[in-house]
Length: 590
Image (cartoon, rainbow, N blue to C red; front, side, top):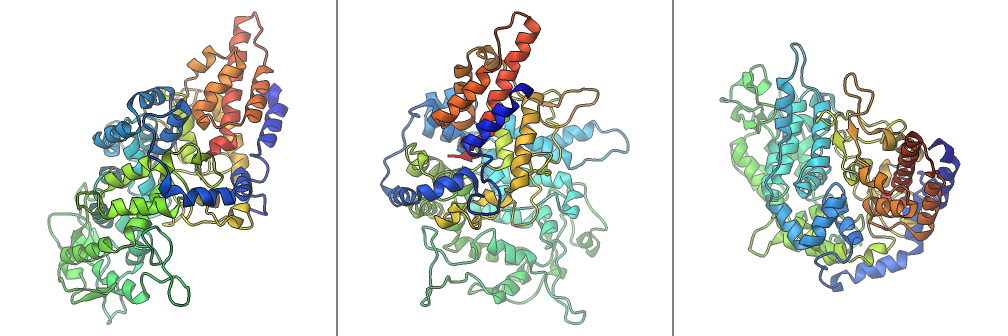
């Protein structure tokens, strides 16, 4: 690849990825921002017409359409997955995925790794990342795990928090809990999140005590605030389609006030570690059971706020922690904001950053009633998101406002799945990948705050995206260093593999399998076509495709020496893949 470095740079410059991807002036939002300005009017028209789009095509009309669908509903397409979807069709694929039981739990991976520990060793956070990548790359229940990953970025806990980091097994259990609830009911999910000890640690309502004026203590308000702001109803009253309700002054209407936070905080008192009794020692954690980091917190009446708790126009009179919690979560669950607030975020995580109001309304309607009188059925919600006409219309996907920037974790997963990556140890030895210069700049379950890696309403300032009145959440974690870091990292890992080196092994643990690509490497055009399908859902423009093909073809394969010929073919494949994963058509998932 060294001999083609100038061509690589030229190709990237022409394709627009290195031009204007920073966080500064008007060109800083990259290709997505540039396109957004040029097609804002067309995007608005497409969004307005969302309700009138025809039914989703089933099966996919092309392999490119199948690859695009799999980019939304899984951690990325592979040739095998594309062929399977072409046979099954969209609806059947979704139904099959919804029916699949949860695969190997993350906790099972922890148990297996624990059994192998030497004396004095303890579990560590790397096991969470290893289990995550193993699941993302190899699990058959891809839709469940893609939704669970989306939920982990809404109901955030983070191993970047030192106290959470002390309980990596608890984080694995939290991921399993999200996976179990991904196709369950939102009300159950909200309760399981609220009672999970890792959330209790992260948002400080584990060991939250009733007020005591004598010592100046009041209930901790942290979780009470975030369960409303981030996990259920949001900051402002919403219409069914996710647009803001406005008051007589044309201002947004707050969903809650400080008094509501204070009242709800009284509900989240008296909860602490699981155990067979409600003794003070167990509440404070001086006695414990082995599974307390994965079992739901229990109520401790002695530490629960007595009397009434008033919030959101509701008064809870229950005196026990459990009864108070049930009444409070029932109230939040019944709020009309939940459907559009959660539905829009799931659409953003899976399909597009800027869904039309009509798309949001259709999904929120399903949240409110799955057709059988059930509210909060996430299985029905996910099905509605994936099969909605706006998600499946391939022509509309070409609009500048369609799609989303693919965050680094999803980019790497897509690359590894596209080329059937395997772990040489079976463990997927990937550790912290936070470094935006020397690595991909993101680690699953290590968000910098409860607000995730990026906010759902983030607008890059001074960009064409802002001018078009669009949002681009993932651009919040994109800057000059991360753009350069992505290119440098992928130039390294595409030929050498991803993750850490196993003991006494010079090769990285996670190795892509380029066997099928090497078989056609002598034909530069065929090679680039195959790579473009697997990585960009065949959206690579003809001019860029021609440039990449020319760069690949410049590597001579008319060589008689077998060793040199093998090296040349590998260089062709590595270059084709690298240029594809550096392209805007890969970075932006449509």
